[in-house]
Length: 208
Image 1 (cartoon, rainbow, N blue to C red):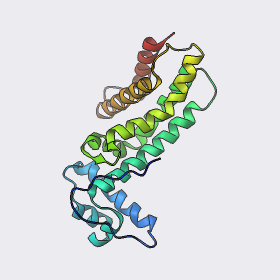
Image 2 (cartoon, rainbow, N blue to C red):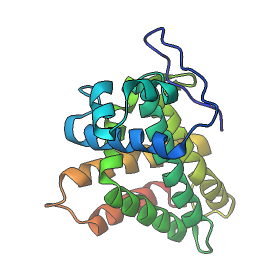
Image 3 (cartoon, rainbow, N blue to C red):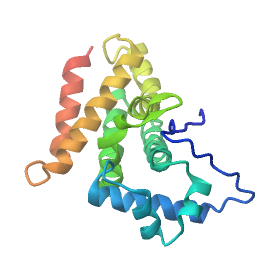
Image 4 (spheres, helix red, strand yellow):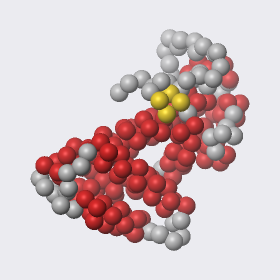
């Protein structure tokens, strides 16, 4: 995976750490996650992150160039964990739709267990990185977990032939949107209702 960095908005240069401490880095990331959940990304200030983490501003800038740089790290970590869950779900035996159902289970379970983390996606498009908008990268990264399954389904004649990249992007984008909608309307829709809707929608549109 390419190294991804936020494009800095100021001229601050990060000093090189001789022995970076992953626990210190995680303290900043966890503090930012809590604050984003409480206040949103746009209102987030480095001073608040530092105070919540119980560390110094000088230490913050040893690890991150800016709050955008830290936000990129948050999203990379979240997306990597989600992608691994999807890959595990689709690698098991079964028909394409059975494995897709397991992928939806993995996605929705992960979202429910990480509601705070899922809120990061609300602000992804506001951060430009060295590989373009972070929202596009995150969608691409998750879509790569589904593409092999979709290609296999086409080869077996289980679903209609289509561009696998566009199809994977569509499935990830739709699932992401519906998962976000569900989190805000859990009093009206259950997890199983959302999963069934997505499966019926996909099955009706792609069925061979």
